[in-house]
Structures are given as structure tokens and as C-alpha cells.
Image (tube, rainbow, N blue to C red; front, side, top):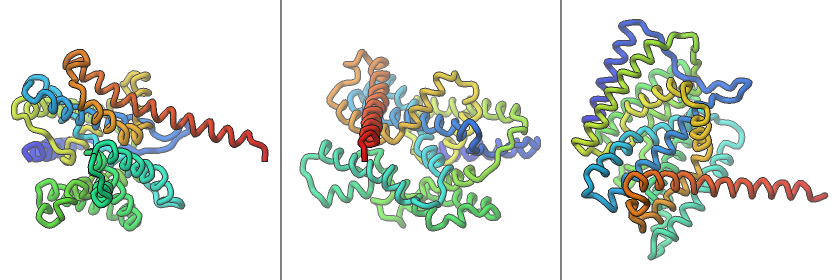
Length: 359
């Protein structure tokens, strides 16, 4: 909670600075141009996907070497650094959300079906005493693998948008809706709803991330003024970056605190920081991260199989702590991408074959 309060205080000071010095700034906008949609959102998803893997790598190292303080505190730092990931996925998923024909068909085909197949396979691999009622509970709550809670969480947001689309996209009340979502999210983070909501529901409660979802919708309908000066904003973000970096090191290395995924301020700060920094990235690096973002669903669903299998292998046996960390990261991102390429290539060849068959 200290991290949450510090973030809110820093954000308040930053907002006061922007207001006092009349520094203009507008939200990013995912406009589609002749070159295609804004590519920075794919990059953000790539960062978020790598971040999710880093969070689970910390648990993997902690499982084998909980007493190796230097290594574990280092992996904890990278885990805490990555706590923007799930909120950023929620935000970017909301940005391009539109209620149109085939809304649920696309969600079923592109999200629910892969999740169902992965959950069945994961349950068979991870557990020994099979029970259909237990599986259905794990499936609905996203508990087959730890990160799978994201899917039922996201499906709830899709349902919320489907039901309240007119309210959530009403520009005349957008600030009020965003403020209400902020208060609800803050109260959830403070544990206000813990005694009201069923305990099993806590992990997939939309109240934990509702601010990011509403903010994503509003970004999707916003208009970024690229003529506004960015020098002061970049200076402010640079200063806050140093403060957040210091706090990350302090909480990870000294207090040994494991952050939650749904703190309010840090994900938004990281989003804005990376948004302004991306244009300075090396093009090759940007392409790689963007590619990871495009394959994020495969990585999200398949990397738990990889990390689960790796729990029979001491990470230090992969060349020591540093090499083990890098190899683990490469395997957990690379193997799902390889499987994605094989599946997609198979689909392409299958379509080509059918198109070559005469009627």
C-alpha cells in the first residue's frame, strides 16, 4: 500500500506542476494512417508480454534458490519493474474495442477457444487426480495456470463494454466515468470490497483493473495533438523515472516487497514513459518487441507450460544465475513463438491447398 500512496502523491505533484506552468498534454491516440494503425501499441503489448514472463521467472528462481539473497532480490526487482504488464494489457485491449457485427464471434474464436484448449491441456499436464468439477472451477476462475486468470477477467470487461457501450463511449460524461472508475479501483486496491465479494472472485474482480479499462476506451476515442510541445513533458517523465527507479530498488532490494499487478499509478506512468521513448528506439529492437506483441496470445497461453516443465530443472544448471535467467527468458518467449509460427504456417498451407483444389 505504501507504493500505491507514493504513486498517487507523485502523480498529484506532477499534475500540479503541469497545471501551475500551463504545460499542455493530450492522451495518445491510436489513429490509423496510410502506414497503418499506431504501431506503438503493439510495442507496448510486447513490453507487457515480456514483463509477464519476468514476473514468473522470479517465482521460478525463488522456488529453487529462496536463500540466495542477491539473485532473488535482483529477480524481484525485474518482477516489480514488470508490474505494469497486466494493467497495460487491459488498457491496450480496450483501446481498439468496438461494438460491431461479430463482436462475440471474434472473442470466442480468437480468445475463448484457444484458452479452452490450453486450459484442458494444462489441467491434464499439471494435475494428476482429474475431477470435472474441479476443472470447471479452475477454468472459470482462470486457475489452471496462475496467469490464466487474465482471460475470465478480460471476458468480463468485454461483457461490460457490450452492455454499457453507450455510457462508456459518451464523451460528455467521460471525465466523470473515468473519475468513478478511479475511485472504484482505488477502493478495490485498499481492500474495501474484500469482505463484500466472494473470496474466490478476488483474483478476477474487474474492480481491480476497471480504471485501466475505462482509460483505454477513452484513449481509443481521443485525439492527440502532436503539435503540442513535449520538452517539458519529457523532462517531467525523466525526473519521475529516476524517482520510480529509486523506489523500485528500495522496495525490491531493501524491503523485499512483492508488488501487486493492479496498483494505479505505476502502469500509467510506464505507459506514458514508453510512449514518449519509443520513437528513439532502434528500429530492429522495435520490430522484435512489436513482433512479440503480435504473438502475445500464444506466449501468454503457452509459456506457462514451458515454465512448469522447467520446474524440474535448476536454473543455475543452465550456466549459472545470469545465463540461467537469460536462457529461461528466451525459452519462455521463443518456444511459444515457434509454435505460433508452425500453427500459422500450417493454416496458411491448408488454405492454399484448399484454394488449389478445383470445384
